[in-house]
Length: 357
Length: 269
Ligand SMILES: Nc1ncnc2c1ncn2[C@@H]1O[C@H](COP(=O)(O)OP(=O)(O)OP(=O)(O)O)[C@@H](O)[C@H]1O
Ligand SMILES: [Mg+2]
Image 1 (cartoon, rainbow over the protein chains, first blue to last red):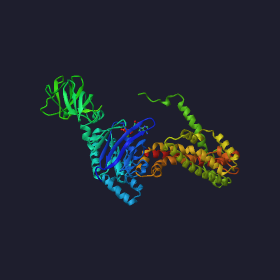
Image 2 (image 1 turned 60 degrees about the vertical axis):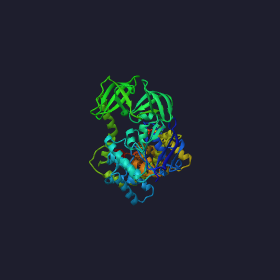
Image 3 (image 1 turned 135 degrees about the vertical axis):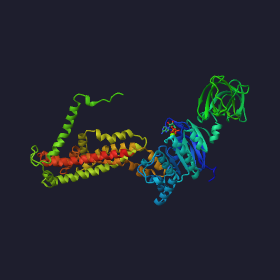
Image 4 (image 1 turned 180 degrees about the vertical axis):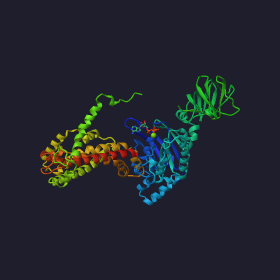
């Protein structure tokens, strides 16, 4: 299948419940074979969108197309899409094998073939010795893998995963991330993965859609999202960042001319649709370097430092009182500046970015 | 932390509890004991014997009791079965069909028989059957029993269904099961404890109903409770104690079974 052809086309989807609007005209294309993540804080509509794709909710407006076909008229059991539910929802009265072959049986596979395919998928998730167990006799991590196997077995066109790792403890979660990504690559099935954990999204995804309050804020690769956030919400939600209040003199051809607190002028990339006036500059803390005060640096006063082993967090204040965070690598050459000392901050090339508010 | 209220410390609470238990259970125990009495007297103990049990099955009253027992069990099984099916359907509608108009009214209607005084239902049923010209007999008993059995079957079934999250059925439909298959293969098996529990409860309620049965039964048709009542009116013989003890035994077995099934279902997930 062509890497760039569209698996799911979500077009202007609005979902209204009685009084709440959960989705305000959401659009996105999910490509064949890609690991696509819906990322956003609690209540932003991630589950709602997933349920619209799976068919458990009707969209109020807009359309969802699966490989070009509008799926609005199809009930959930007619959509070639499978879901890994957040609480797994393994059938407690069936064995692992029966759970995994359930979808195949419903699709009319004869028992022998369904069982063979189920065993194959169980092997993929490394659970082939657990076929005869009941879900109640498995650990959380094993249940999660059964849920994955059950959804993968019928070889869906798209796999939907609603925070499948949130019930696992941290250590296990990190191991499963790698495994999940590997399975996605091996099967070549498009995954739509829901999470509110930005680290999870950054490490696993081919592309991420950042959502907030029913709107899509930005869609892009993890690198795009992290390094070129479109607006304040995205910059703030993804990783740590400094948001500086600046005076924007001019914006043209994707570059902006801004004045930092203290009057220092800076030329930096600007998000599309940024305009002149007051604006916010995003500067990642690890891309600021410190040195002695000079005419080309941004003056700051150290207020505190936090020793974190590999890193040192330096808290400082700009001349207008705005706090700023600097992350220094902990190396022998770098002394830790004293509290109260005056420094000059320098932004690495392209480290600062003007955002849309 | 505040210590939980200790009821035992209230003066007289223990005595009151014992009094209640005695009033409740002493008669049952005495009946059970005296059913093994060798004497024909119902008050004097004449040694242990099973002769009244033999009498129930072979004595002069045996055909009467046998017919009554057949009627009772036929009606109880039929009414409980139908009530269970109706109650299951009602529970699906109440718990799975989302909101619909008249939902609260439906719930009230299902449970109404629990609240209406039984004598009122009895009289009303009789008048109803007479008005529509329905000949009283086994059929009228069956219909009346079916009606009051429904809420008893409904309660455990609905409670059980509420404890099964609907994500299971969604998972089934996500895996290409039609709504009917999702019900048959997922929801129904998960509800079995509730359904059995509901059936047993309905069965026992039907088996020992006297009041309504007495009103709507036709002449010459008896169930066990009405047959026993009929015999008692002609003087209490020890064989009544034997048959009452048998009935008590059946009730205890069924109620216990219902309780255990309900509990087994709860601990399973
Ligand atoms: N059935 C419903 N009826 C009414 N409002 C709903 C319903 N389902 C969701 N909502 C509302 O829609 C909004 C989006 O909910 P949704 O479950 O999609 O959030 P989410 O992004 O998945 O959050 P979380 O990370 O907490 O799971 C919320 O404000 C929620 O209250
Ligand atoms: Mg959610």
